[in-house]
Length: 149
Image (cartoon, rainbow, N blue to C red; front, side, top):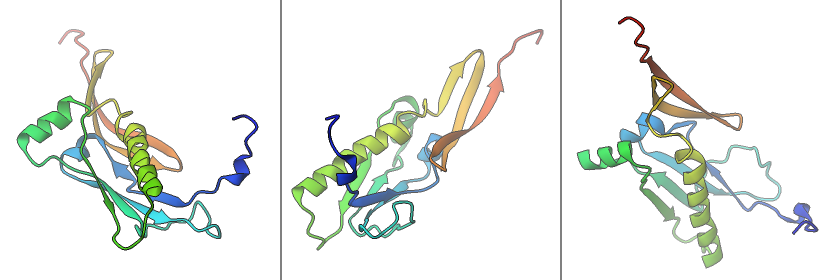
């Protein structure tokens, strides 16, 4: 694999989504990611958001038990909708399913959950913010320091 020419690989699609997602926002908001065709002539950093191939949606909970599951586990529900009439091959569909799994791992499983206790402090993640290639949590920190009161 070390002798492979990486310049021979060209991206064929681009996944774009919201800048704000995850954390407690998962309880009330769904997150939609558009899968768009990326032509060779297009810049990989250009905003497309066409969704001409598919749409990946991280669904919000629909019930109280769904909210509890979302709060206390890393279990998530996604929906992958392929666009009708595009003529996607089975390989392209499998690639999108693999992309969904990677996206779940990179964006929703690495967030340490909505609430986390460490070093005598409670961290509540309101949402994660993605900008300039970096995901940063927006958190409330409650200090549980019990020094005299």
